Amino acid sequence: MTGRFITFEGIDGAGKSSHIGRLADWLKGRGHTVVVTREPGGTPLAEALRDIVLHRSMDAMTEALLVFAARRDHVQQQIRPALAAGTTVLCDRFTDATFAYQGGGRGFDLAVLGQLEAWVQEGLQPDMTLWFDLPPRVAAQRRAAARAADRFEAEDEAFFERVRQGYQRRCQAQPARFAVLDAERTPEQVWCQVAQTLESQGW
Image (cartoon, rainbow, N blue to C red; front, side):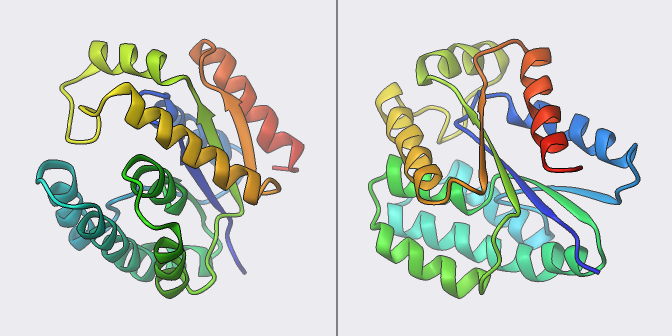
């Protein structure tokens, strides 16, 4: 028995994290066993690396290597065992975020990221990716009203526009995996998009 792997993607402030718990409850109500996790993070080692990535200054290569190191432990210790047990895994960010933030935002070499992806994941890809697409200007307004900024959230609008373009490239390269959601709508309208997407796939 093999579970399904759904990832949530989008720039900071897009609202994806507020919907992941609701989707978990929705799926449990339909008989699924669900694990909710996040990246960087999901295991004690990966959470320690997350804290370093979010709060310490470093160059783009160091950042990418730390993110993939955290991902390797997460995949080995959490994601693959859950999927093997037939569990549905909901993950707040995965490799698309690395191509968007480190590749798009930082301008790091996409070919190197692709090699790291192949080494670390050994073929593992999400069954579905929900991309909460939002203009960076709107996302910045939401972040300012919600919380103090970490090292990424403190970046300027131009950075987040490059991140958004990074997501667009991943979506264009793998359109069958992506569901693009209009995250500028109200939370309830966004949730309707999430539910309709899952229902259209027979969930």
